[in-house]
Image (cartoon, rainbow, N blue to C red; front, top):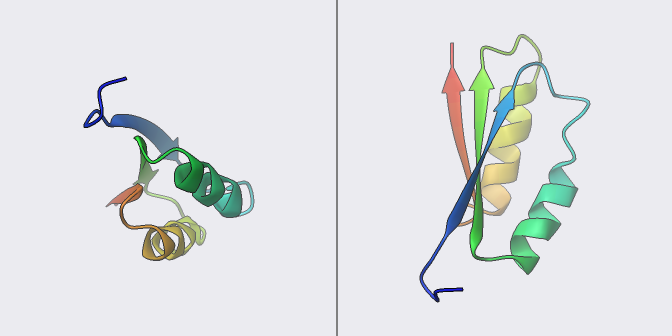
Length: 69
């Protein structure tokens, strides 16, 4: 694999507050620095946005969050 290559994985989210394994994603991201996750919150009505923002705060180099109304 090319040293500077990053792989982005897009994960759509809708009302995932109770299903998101935040620690699992963070652990995976730490072990695989060439992979980035983009979580797209598509108008969730629960606390999905807050969960994603908390994950991003813990690992801003590996996670991105896009929240849509």
